[in-house]
Image (cartoon, rainbow, N blue to C red; front, side, top):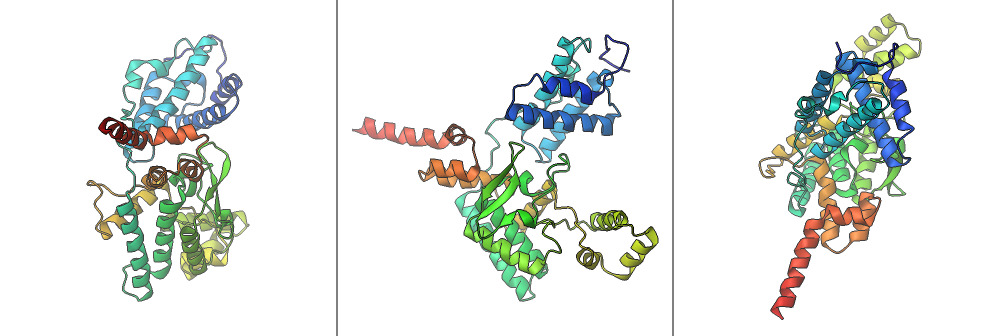
Amino acid sequence: MTDATATGTTETPLSTAIEEYLTSVEAGNSAAIADSSLREWANWLATERDATTLEEVAVIDCRRYARHLKRRVRDDDLKASTANTYYAYVRAFLGFCEADELIDRNPAAVSRAQSELPEDPGDADRQFWSERDRKAILQFMDRRVERALDGEAAVGRERAYRDRALVRLLALSGVRGAEVFRDPADDRRDGATWEDVDVEGGALRVFGKSREYEYAQLPERAAEALERYRRVQEPPTPRFPVFPTDHAPSKYAAVRDQLGDRDYDEARIEEILDANPVDEVVREYEVIVPAISTRGARDLMKRLCEQADLDVDGEYLKPHGARRGLGHKLYSEGHAELAQSALRHASISTTHESYSDIRASETAERVDDVLDE
């Protein structure tokens, strides 16, 4: 069952066709992003559609992939523009295969497949943390830690310190959520670990949007919160995630997998787990549990905003909105170059484009001044 029939007699593995396509893409970020997007798509096809060869890719597969991207946008896991970009790489790849006469037509270019793509509203839904909301959530997190220390909070001390460090990191560093939390759709984004944190140097090593490792700035207040949280958490190894998951089944699975890799037999592993709380096993045996996921971080921010009684136009403070809020604050106060550096934009033109609304407002004020004269 296929909408793409090969002209040859043998089937072409998707991985082979992708490699051939990538050799035709110009070097640089475009090639790196295309590589990542296409391999993620191929993995999705193999997992969800049981398709591993070029000839198996049908229009319905592309339609379902577009719907998968739309779902990720609805879950706030992707921006609509990013989802459309991911699909565009797939369409370009299959177009290349059509031109190379590997398939008869491009199934991703069919209108019924593309009709499932999410609409891209541009900047209309670009939330950013206002200065008022940023101060309010930071103050709430400080009070929550104090209540936890006094035994008056609904959460324990470690959890209160963890959540405060997470919110300060988002609010003050300009990191992207996918750079510090685990992205289940990208096996290279497994969350920041303690060996990535340089408190004294004021830097955090992250796997950036460029698909390369970069250093994000770590202001003093964020660094202080991370250091205090580290003392409370006492991570068993520097490779432990800064923000580990609270999902108990994931912890048990990590213990079983990693102790099994160390030649513990199943009976012994279960004996250890039956005799001890899983968190104690994780610490004693230096098991590395998964980091909190990007979706888990969003759910956490929803709960924190509800507890802080923060209503942001009927929504909540989204992780990526913190990055935009920081850039907006810096740019609006005349620090365009600092905003570029803090957000790690490749060029100042990217920063100007991101905050064109501020430039337009400033231009309007200057025009009014001239006309008034």
